[in-house]
Length: 79
Image (cartoon, rainbow, N blue to C red; front, side):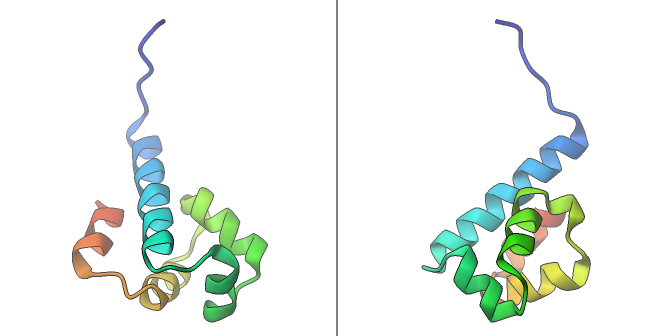
């Protein structure tokens, strides 16, 4: 089977999605509860988590603040 290489953008998107999902799980919550907490429609939050390139900086800050995400993890998302 041939090797598959992701572009730099695809790597960033996959990393952001993975980190956001781990933070949601680590906070002991789910996307529905988080969406209510940040004042976002659940479907919109789901799209933002799985397609992080569609998330605005303001939305990202709200989500990370609601999850009490550390500065180290925040830096990894923007890496």
